[in-house]
Image (cartoon, rainbow, N blue to C red; front, side, top):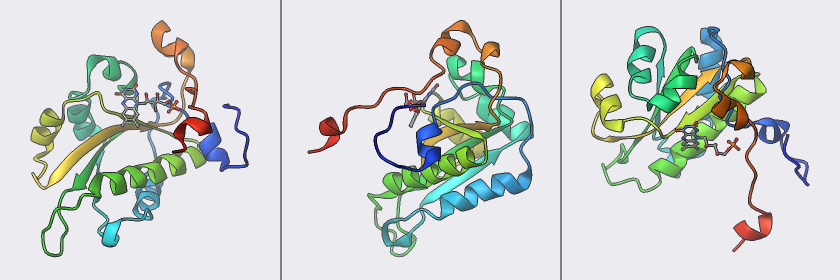
Length: 181
Ligand SMILES: Cc1cc2nc3c(=O)[nH]c(=O)nc-3n(C[C@H](O)[C@H](O)[C@H](O)COP(=O)(O)O)c2cc1C
């Protein structure tokens, strides 16, 4: 665990981009709970621009095929892959919503933390083809594709490649003084 000075949520302290995921199915109710947690995020004008495609079974295979080979190597074990999207325009009036990505990032954060609380891993990835994902699932042009999350129970680190074993630990953070303007 990282050394944290202040008393913050244990799930925040504990979470890291774990690549060791077990091939074990996740109950439907748990998946719904993660989406519900995400839905509680704040959003500009309460637009709730986030959209989640929860890929299991055949859809998981399709989404997995859009990942880079490096991500496929470890994320291929995850029973669930999630395609996160963000609606670009406001439902009311159709104007551009410049906050759709930040709102969706926040919702993904809620998803990830609830997963951590329930003993699950939710690991976001940018290493995939947005174009291929859009085509595979016929994603509307009004939705930006944000990332793919690998979701599953933590697995045996020794089953990872040597390279991934070596980096399967919490990454350091900038000192607070560096992020304060
Ligand atoms: C938007 C986003 C994209 C990421 N893309 C990848 C990815 O393609 N492959 C991967 O293994 N990790 C990916 N990560 C995980 C980051 O590398 C990781 O969160 C970062 O290094 C900080 O480490 P920590 O989460 O363990 O604290 C991504 C994380 C985010 C938020």
